[in-house]
Each structure stands twice: as C-alpha cells, then as structure tokens.
Length: 151
Image (tube, rainbow, N blue to C red):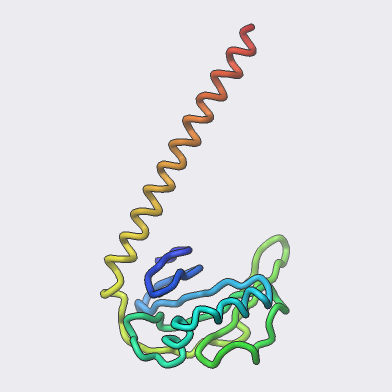
C-alpha cells in the first residue's frame, strides 16, 4: 500500500507505505531547510516520535525526504532517517543517506487497515469524480469546436 497526504496518525503524512512485513513507513517531504524547521512546530508529532510512547499513533519508521544537499544528516533527529532525491537521466533517484531506526516493531497495520482502506476509497472516488468532470468538460469543448467548424 502507498498513499499520499493522508491522516492516519495525529498529523498529515506526505507519504505512507506498508511493506510486505506490514511495517508502516512514513516520509515527510521537505523542499527547503526552512520547510524542515517549520515541521518542528508540530510538537506533539515529534514528542510521539521521539518518546515512542503510543505505538498505535506512530509509524514503524520515519524519514525526511529532501532534494540532495538540502539538509546535512547531522540535523536529522535520532528517530528519523534521511532520503535525498536527485535527477539522473530525467529520472528521480532516491538515496538513503541516513537509515531510519525502527521506532517500534509492533504490527499496527491491522489496527489502521480500516482507516487506510477508507482513505483509498475516498481518494479513488474523488479521482473518479474529477475524471468525470474533466470528461464532461472535454465533451462540451468538442461540441463547441464542432459548432464553430459548421458555421
């Protein structure tokens, strides 16, 4: 499973994935150093991640993802990892600079699975509705073009 911009914990996660072992990985995407600094205004989030006090409310691993050279690895908290993104041959390449430690090894997937599936459902429905609206707009524009070509 992979989902973007979802609230499964007490904050919005930019990217969440569940691997084959059912561990949940969260990636917080930061494009600038100031963006990274702003993340620490979410005090509850960082207290939970650092103290590992409520395992049902945190992922198994937590990473920061940035463009290459945005952050030095020593600025990354001990409970987080760092992945840098570069572009090579018109493809994005992700490199793990600092591996995130396991915050816990509890399998919380079964607990959050209903929420996760609900998020997938609503994102799918929203996408289908947006596609429907776009298709209706295309049909309308085609009719307008046909009318202009006839006259």
